[in-house]
Image (cartoon, rainbow, N blue to C red; front, side, top):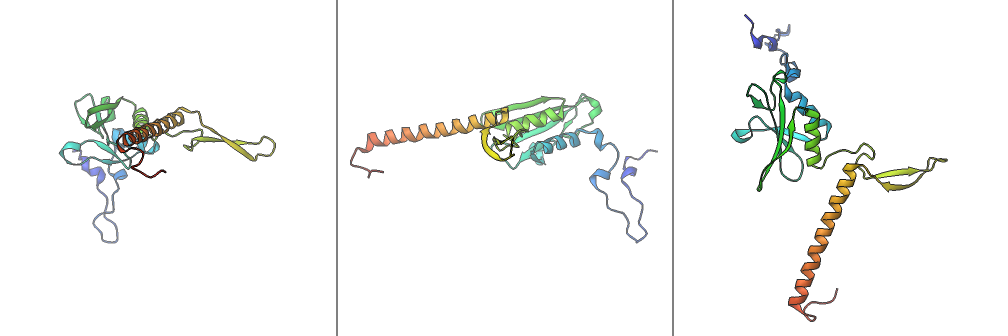
Length: 197
């Protein structure tokens, strides 16, 4: 009889302990045949930290952590009707990443590629790494003859351009809001209300 737990048992040691420690990596065959290891490795490579969901609502999902904004939830569905982040890869698994806010639930990724799923999640979280500037946002310029640093230029790779545009838009939004508040205050207050700045 084939016992699936037999692969996880360990022989007793000669020092009298009942069992030697077992890690999750040693827990049995087939961990590389499931989607959990694939998606966790892909997300880690993109710099996305996560936890395994707990409770009735999050059961079977991975949840992103350590960032501002809403949590992204990742799970997998297979052709046999099973779902959860760690299902059998042989059953044509499809990854699903969603974010839920007050406005509702929005998909971030739906497809079979764990690397593409991780990239989509990282991009949504603003963690897409730039291979050209290592996320500094600028490229160093060196003198061809001396190799001395002569300056910097903005990085023109899409993740950096997107971040620059987002920062500029946020600055403009705050500037316009401050200007509108100042005009409203000036209309209500008058010239003798507040001291000059």
